[in-house]
Image (tube, rainbow, N blue to C red):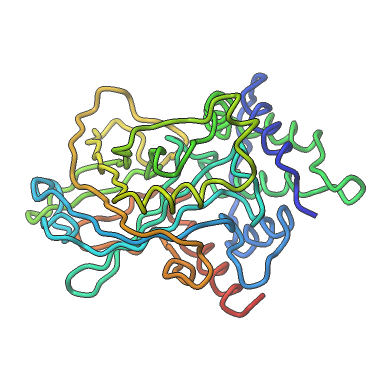
Length: 333
């Protein structure tokens, strides 16, 4: 049985409250262990993603700003149009999750470069992640597993998780104070992690990025949350694209050596230099079944030359976890 949406909302409120003791020491976590915990928390839809199961596809192009060559030699920023396959999604493993749920929205992109190479970006509509270590995410999934007697997560287990994992608190506070977006086209998406841009002189710059909608950011009001219905995001995206391209500007934030590199739960200080390094334009959108995005494993470590990961343990862990989930759905399990 899947945890009801109210439990996700209650968890967001729980994470925004109460003092937090020190985080327990992280232990080695296996990727298959995490995937199994996600399955236990949400159930399994054979042949589907274990997380971010509910989604929609879109296609378009990205035009990078050649001025970014100061920081990176990536072909993404040549100034030429690069084809893009996009997938928008809700976090969690419930394919029928209501679009009003107080949970994360994802935007995953696959760019096809002129030489045929691929580049992936996987982003969320929140500025921080809910775990500094894979262990925290694993413990969250275990805490959210339904109690067989009630079909709902045990509130005591959620409270115990909160008390022992302060790294989950920043996201909990953000989710509790921000309503979900009214449309994917009105949501900003953050890269969450820190990355390295490497230019033609092999100089490295620490960066983060986000995609900001040209349509403007808009969250559901309290009244709209009551009236929106359970499944409006896909329809809204398809109807919006029919009226013309929907666009996001890619903004690059330039970091310093003192900024957090390996902890996606920490936002960078305000005032860091930013520049627009490209524009994403989507021209078509559709349900995901049978569409181009459905079969893609959006591994965030698939990167073009000139962009590299940091030692962020969550970022590095995502690749093997995605691979296991991908293998399971390819096999029809």
